Length: 119
Image (cartoon, rainbow, N blue to C red; front, side, top):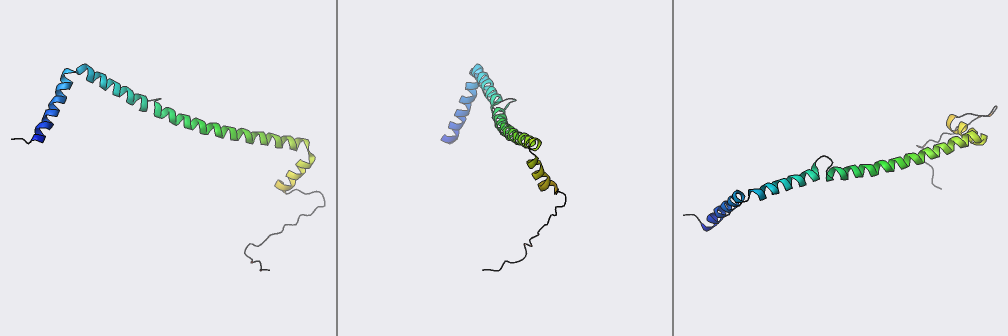
């Protein structure tokens, strides 16, 4: 003799299979609907893919703005170098260590290992 719990489980199982047997159209519709939802979420160009692409688009637009700003700064620097002898001389001295005729450059190296005495 089966316990009351086991007969109830068997009864639920039979009810489920009987429901599927007599409601095939509903079951097919349900399977198709679930498949469409899964495809819409995870398929090619699905919701998850679109969110990922949107995030990538935002990052790329930010990088583009930064690069455009950098390009504008470089164009301004080029214009300053073309129009100002003082700016050209400043860059030549700083970047390339160039000097005027007869000018001497002294380089002072500071030893970072020396301890500075307390005052």
